[in-house]
Image (tube, rainbow, N blue to C red; front, top):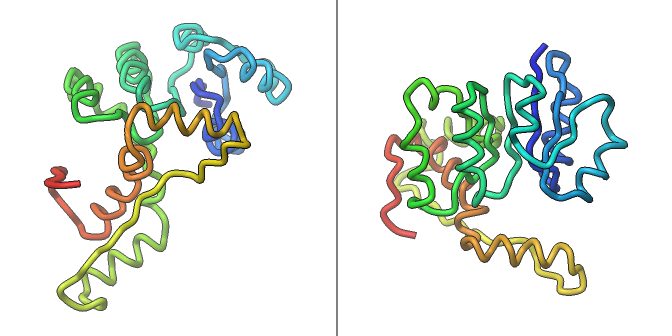
Length: 202
C-alpha cells in the first residue's frame, strides 16, 4: 500500500486527483494539504481518518511515500523541491512553473531526485494522441504538415466572483500559453516525435 499526500484542494485536486487516488486499490490517502481553511473544512467530510493540514511539512509528517501536487504553478517549484529532498516521489500537476526563470529551480535536483518527479501531463497517454502520432509518422496526413493551434483561457464571467478571481490570480502569474499551453506543447512533442525541448518563438 502506497501512502500519499494530496497537496492542493482546488478544482483539479478535488475533481481529478482525489477521486483517482481513492479508486486505486494500492493507494491510501494519508494526508490532505491546503493553506485555505475553507478548503480543508470542505474535505474533512469527504475522507476518513487522514491528516488534514495547512502546510506540506505536516503532510509529510504523516509518513507518506509520495506527494501529488495539484497546486498553482507559482508555488509548485518550491513544493516539489521540498518534497523530493525529503525523499518522496512527486507527481506535479502541469505547468510546473510560470516561466523558464522560475523553472530554473529544478536544475538544483540531482539525477536521482529528478527520477522521482513526474509531471502530470496525462493527455499524452490518450489513445487519440497515439493514433494521431501514428498517422503523422506514417505520412497518412500528407506532407508538409501544418499545425495550427489556438490557446485560450476559461470564459471570464464577472458574475461568478470566485471563478473570475481565480482566473485573474492565474493571469497575474502568466498568460494562458503558460497555463493552458503546457498540454498543447506536450501533445505536439508526442505527436511530432519531437526531440527538442526548445521553443523558438511563441
